[in-house]
Structure formats: structure tokens, C-alpha cells
Amino acid sequence: MSTHEPTRAFETAPETPVQTARARVGTVVWGLIVLALAALIIISELGLVVLNGTYVLIGLMIGAGAALVIGGLLSARSRKGSGSGPDSGAGGTDSDHR
Image 1 (cartoon, rainbow, N blue to C red):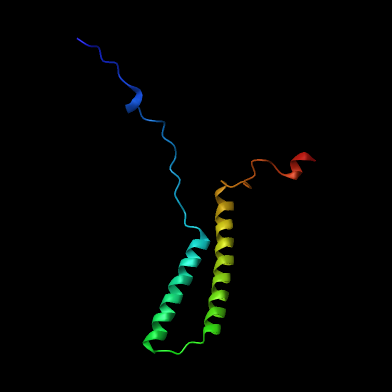
Image 2: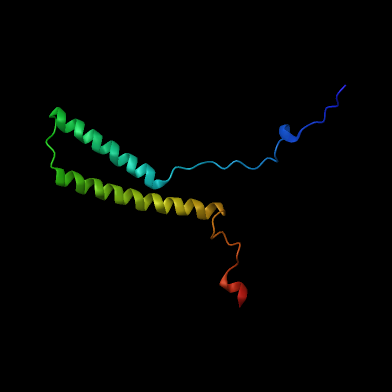
């Protein structure tokens, strides 16, 4: 007869809180730019509208810049409110050292 010792392979690790993955603002903006370009190319190939390439690029740049700025501000605002970022106040403020 053989003796059987339980192995540690089936023990579970302590549970850690699951962090939700958030999409980065830049990734979303670049995805929207690609979709907008694809839609504009399809529209122009169908002959529905005649597009000026310079104006299309200027419009896309303005839209992308505005989306990046607004998305960055909203992201920073939500990070500041959650208290999990590096500026969450864990290190104290200058008024603590007076």
C-alpha cells in the first residue's frame, strides 16, 4: 500500500480584488479617426459627395485634438475622484509640514 500526501498544486491563491480594464482615450480616438476616414472614403467613392482632402484632414485633426483633450481631462477627473492615483493625498500636503 502506498501513502498519498496531498500536493499543493490544487490549493488556491488568496483572492485579490479584480481591477477592471479601461480603454485608453488615445486608443478610442484613433479608432474613431480610422472609422471616420473609412466612412469618408466610402462616401466619396459612391459619388454622393465630393470631398476636399485638405478640409477633411483639418476637420479630423481638430476633432481628434478636441477628443484627446476632453478625454484626458475626464480621465484625470475620474482618477482624482477615485483616490487610487499617485496624487490621492497619501503623502500629505505642504500645509502638514508648517
